[in-house]
Image (cartoon, rainbow, N blue to C red; front, side):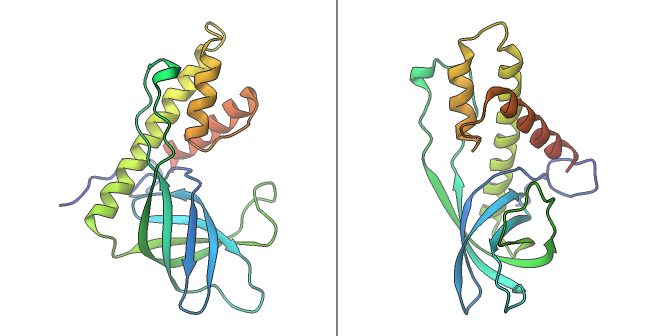
Length: 190
């Protein structure tokens, strides 16, 4: 069963979401911890510690810790689910390129790699497609809540709760708004 891809405007076949997740990366010789910058149903951009003595691997095995997201809604703050659950995906990644990040984004001592999932199961593709769709919809919902904040200051607690569910933690409201708009725009033009 094929999972339909979300439409994109830049020629990509799938939409990517700025999901920041931990991963364990192994290449048969060594294992290290990494962190994703964005994920789609077909691939991932991630970072690992830079090793001066060795070139980037061609294929890596990974365990990716993904958030279990539910669609955001208008529930009262007391009844909102505390979503601290995660799912772990085991998948091989074929590295397609090393990525140079903008200086304001790049973390010192990190190697940024873009890769395609190698022979993912239909279940993995469906899981990732669903996660990206929910993440995108939740970002849109959160941006609408922020726009309503001037009319209803009681939304502030819910905004911070929901933003933490998406990985935006401890950001002042204006910075949160700018970051969300930037990330949402990157989803739409991906």
